[in-house]
Length: 88
Image: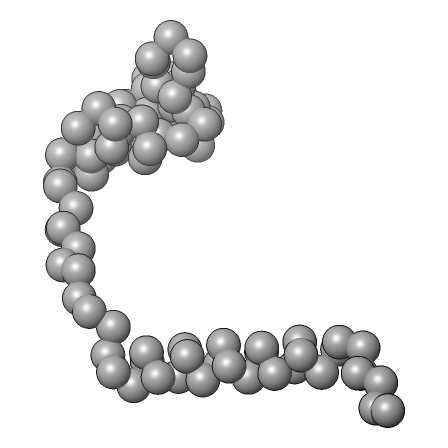
């Protein structure tokens, strides 16, 4: 969870491991503190939710064929760049 919170916090995470949240929406210092705390709570709630695990799938037969055909085509283009052989 700490790693997720660190990723979510981004630049707000300091080297000491604290999170710096600024709130300057209102003229009231008390209200700005409340807003900053709300943001921190929301950030922690977001970090508590574990991301869904990705289920690995095999590439489809069509995508494999397209990949190989593309590689063959690129190889042919590169072969055309070579110096032509002298015919004697």
